[in-house]
Length: 273
Image 1 (spheres, rainbow, N blue to C red):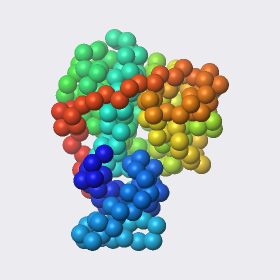
Image 2: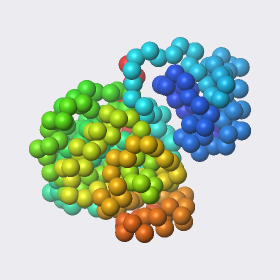
Image 3: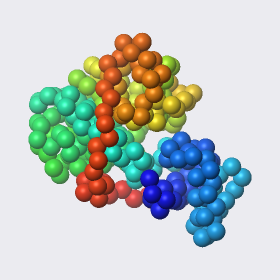
């Protein structure tokens, strides 16, 4: 990743979260700690962010409550080629006439361009997926009720009863914060709660996770490995992670990154509020 692009992502992360640690940025961007610290110093000197102990702070911190996950537009730029290849492989599992569930996320969003010619019944809590599908396809798209979180591009409800419980999908396609021997993990309670409801409505679960996700941990387990049918990841995955998935009896697909110009692909228009 070019320095200019990396620093643009750092600025977006800092503005979205108000304060973010160096190690969080290392994890999200896949850069070294030394590189991130140099970026923070350079950006601080230019007056773009404020350098603080162990991380960076926005010049004008946010005060409204927001989800504990990355901004959609920020996360979309990270591992873009890997995510597109993973999404292509996931879309190949879909049959014409299928009933499927697509959880919100930047990797699942990339499935949209590969599903245009299908005739599907789709439940999604992703605002950009629903919007793009309705513009470019013949699918019947259903979204659950709830509050729209513009930064993440998802619709979430804290209540147990919504449209999700009345929908059945042959496959649930979902990303995750992390995936390890404990199972599928998230960091935000509201997101975890919504994903658990989606799991109950799906016959099988397919995880779309770039190789970064198989190195992450969290205290919040959404589903055990025994509930997962398939994981699609990229060639950066470690042999240790693959062995863990195989030992759990999970079908694993490893894809090569899909070289593509970012500006040439469909991108949702999501802005912070």
